[in-house]
Image (cartoon, rainbow, N blue to C red; front, top):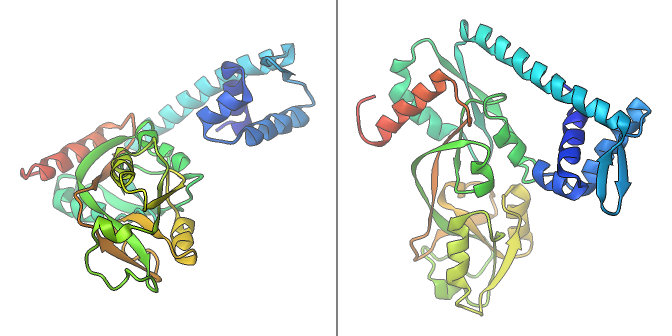
Length: 299
């Protein structure tokens, strides 16, 4: 409900640095500077003094900063009022769905608890698996979506949502169909010797980090980092460069030129329902019902 550039300005002022603000906003420093430059050009004002010791608000910038804070409060209050009004007629839960995180699992769970919510129906809201923008999608829980379903032990994701684990997916290897290993039904770790395995960068997923720690004991296996999060480009890279990819059993149909093979190991990733950090009462009720299903109780 307000100019996103104002959010960037407030974040930069609070952090005192374009770089620190970029990390907090999950943007590049260049993108943050462009937002500030665009805002200053639009207003015809210099809002920040830039020095080698950091950035500081000008007098005009301080005025905009203080008014922006009041605008944020007003916006939150306006949205809250609108939501209270909407609650009287709300009849739909919004379920996010993408290629890597389809909503089928949630639909199956919903069919087991829907009798407890006769006034509600589901609406599927599609979104893109963009590794640069996925954090923004997760952050949209409560605004754009009510629920998402995904494999998740991402520490970054879990800073932006609540998570109800419902099960586990096995970690597998995706192999190009023309690769020497493609005809196998089960891989041994020794089959990976001499190969390059693409996997998520260290530091976000404990599950991926456990695989990495194990495979680092085999110097003949080359480990190649990609970003924390996958999108279709990661699968394309695997096929085009004839490399292996650490993947999940649920992604076996993502790329037609890859075959997903189980590996003789016990690595898994939890999957479940992602929901807002501050869920309303009805969302909490759905989560409670799903929790009872998870534990084999009658909803």
